[in-house]
Image (cartoon, rainbow, N blue to C red):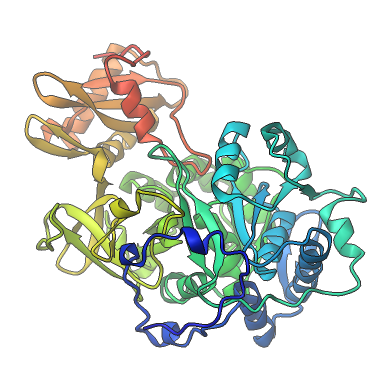
Amino acid sequence: MTPTAPSAQTDRFVHDRLPPRAAWPQRRHDTPELLALPAQVNLVAALFDRALAAGHADRPFLRSDARSLTYAQARDEVQRLAAVLEQVHGVRPGQRVLLRGGNSVAMALAWLAVVHAGAVAVATMPLLRAQELAAIIDKSQPALLLCDAALTTELEAVGSGLPLRRFNTPDADGFEALAAQQTARAEPCPTAGDDIALLAFTSGTTGTPKAAVHTHREVLAACECWPRHVLRATPDDVVMGSPPLAFTFGLGGLLIFPMWAGCSVYFPAIGYTPEAMVRLMNQQGATLCYTAPTFYRQMAPFARTLGTGRLRISVSAGEGLPDATRQLWKEATGLEMLDGIGATEMFHIFISSAPESVRRGAVGQVVPGYTARIVDEQGQELPDGQVGRLAVIGPTGCRYLDDARQGQYVQDGWNFPGDAFVRDADGYFFYQARTDDMIITAGYNVAGPEVESALLQHPAVAECGVVGKPDEERGQIVLAFVVLQPGHSGDAALVKALQDHVKHTLAPYKYPREVVFTDRLPRTGTGKLQRFALRQLAHPSTDPLKAVR
């Protein structure tokens, strides 16, 4: 049993819409660090207290080209912003506050202020449109909207009638200006560890997004697992990366975990391009980078030419890492990429290996604090070497807000992230595919990501996505959507060359019987490939593209 404390969240909207307790996942708190987590804790206060107790008060924390804040300065600003939430807007503990903004110092401070005040942060992707924002507002019922001044158009188009406060602006009625007028700092809300810190909406790779609920203690528990045992960042690290703070990969990597380790984080004035990220790594002295596999692949040529300066750790997550991309990055930089698999529902990474423990082709081993196994469709554990469903338990787990899909993710207390894996005798986990992305063709099982990895080894291929297409004779055939490198022409000769390449790289039955050349692939705002969109294109009745056979 984990310790409990009285809730400070007087607004019970989220608490009252959690799944029935019988549908909750099991929890593990059996390591010394996890057992030491207090029953009453405010996540933001705990992170600032940890940093200041370690002597980091005057060390840089949040940095951009326009401003730089130490840990002490950032805490002061967060307390002033929280005072605005409480005194100007009357936000009460447990109420939801929707945040909309790109990665910036202002967005980070706003998020921290919301959680410091005991409210529930509902961060949204900056690329979302009014219709998508309306669905999130309807689901989460926020009391206040906090929006970057440059991104208000879509939020205003929703017409929700909710109060809206702009941040990242010098205007007199902006969030920052109001905070500067506060004479008193808000004390951290005395939240229970089991009070809600955030709602994380899934990024939509499988259709309608869901809202995953995470508590103050869960997020602190996540800090004691992958960051402590695998990442092992230090106060001297300078962190940068591309995943949005609205995505738990970005929230953990670019805010929570750096705070826990006492690092500094650099946010650029504008979004990254592959070349710009490499140049900024060198200019800012970045030592730790987070981004998705596709972006690393695009960065590799620039890294080879320009170098990567002080970079020592490159973290890949958010989608499967093809071994071809990992090797390309290693050849360009000399760095072994740190891979990992996590989930919005689990907050962050639960399978990963430090660079010195990498095994080629494997995602890694289970992170201390978690337990993982491979099971069949009936939930029975499979022997090593057999493909099955990944099941996980740990100090974090899935609880959806008012969503019938809870029973799909949590079964008999185990979390099922929806991935097919193989585990070897040494405990290394090898990603195969999303369980709904396994292609069954003429009785053979083919993992789409494996074919993608083979295609990416061909010099003509910049990006690709592989799905199954219905076929009367074979049940399904392997269909590849391919984005070409500049200078290559998508003709029949190249189709045959790609097919032959896959036949010589993998078992011949895995080759794509159809290839579609396209200018771009459908991706989420976090860079994940939307295979469900490709499957819709692959259906004969809806496919608007002309396949080259």
